Amino acid sequence: MTLTADRPTSADPAATDFVAARRAMIDSQLRVSGVNEEWVLSAMGKAPREDFVPAAARGHAYIDRAIPLDDGHALPAPLVHGRMLGEAAPTAQDTVLIVSCGSDYLAALVRPLAGAVTVVSAADAAAGQVRGDYSLLLVDGAVEQLPAALTDCLVDAGRVVTGLVERGVTRLAAGRKLSGSVALLPLAEIGIPVLAEFAAPKRWSF
Image (cartoon, rainbow, N blue to C red; front, top):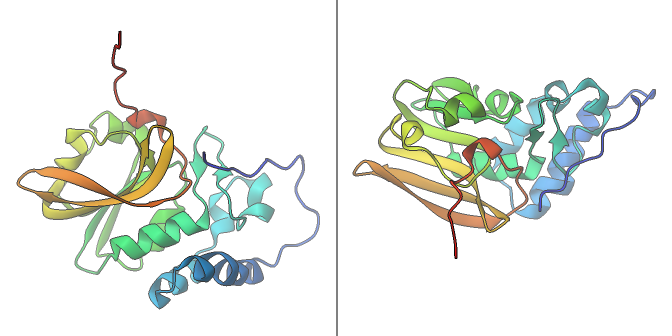
């Protein structure tokens, strides 16, 4: 189950020290959970997470839970993005496709590291409205399945990092495209908001 922060009824009148909040996120959430790559911590220490959540949630932007967004999706907790970024390890040679959860926070983390970044909504990605050749696919949420139209956009040996949901449990997963197909390897159980657009077809059982 993915925990999300409750929406506050009103904005906190006290000014929030976002620089201190980012530092606390790094020290109290990321480092203690095994995210120690300095380049990951540097990227997350620079990106203003508070700018990528609804205005009423800015004061809670660095909480260790997912943040509800205005479109019914949710921004994953910082630890999810730390683990995802470390696993993906984008470089200047990468052309990256990001399937968005409705917030551009992940894209803000990746853009300074990658050669090129394209962002597509979950709805468009699930509908196959994606074009291009990419070396890295990042899905900012948990999926039951990745449609072929999406993985077809990966070049041979292209990488995938995504959330994966199986029987109600979400895990970080990674894979690589080989011989035209992608197999995902679950890496760690972690709470990741589910992208309903990628639900697997229901099967009849008797």
